[in-house]
Image 1 (cartoon, one colour):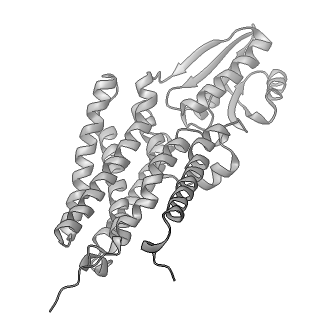
Image 2: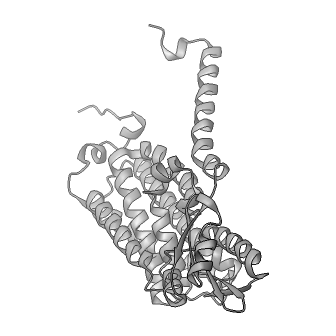
Length: 334
């Protein structure tokens, strides 16, 4: 068999080119593909109007919208709970009001607002626009930005610790791994708080917001540290692409994603739980269901990550041989 060193240079160059093309295919499918196939499908909205008018409106939009006919109070409650992305209120007169919320994902809000405005205009002329929990441009961007910064900060910290241990030939103990997780949680929270204050001084930096960012950062750091402990640098093949894939999906609502992306990516990405939970906290809606869901999911990730990261002997062979990730193990003469 021809050894890798003796293979023709042209073959090695072709293999490298094919590998690059395959990576481009995978990332293109998982990132730009999710954005290129965005189309509304069953976007949840509510209408509060007399029954005969409500039924006419509910026929508007075909399968792109999923209408809920209810009272004004219940419709606004659905919006507060983020179960609909917008509300159309029709009063006798006729006069119409489109109600949206800054605490709802902006992608879903934009689609709902356009559809509801079109329906209202067809019946009663241009409607009034009302926004619950008004949000600035920075407020729209901040939740996803915080999640992405927490992920990449934790990733670089975990990679740095792994590489430093490898270069020095040291075994990283449980105390050092725990210190890394807590340290990245504290420092990333400080970084995110600094950016929030820089971008928009009106963004709240209370205990709820900072605590949720700290939980996000430590959960991500613990998860990554656990995978790096088990797999070494091979874990980067999973952790790196997630930084590119997850934000592209988490920035959308499921009703806008192709069903394949919705099931294969959106359904499990941790970015969506941290992003939407933080969005509600920043807009003063701590009672929204996605805050509780985010706390449970991130808490479970933190617990599982710490269990793998700190469990004695969980990766004893890898810790005893720091070069295992690169398939290079020093052999000493005894």
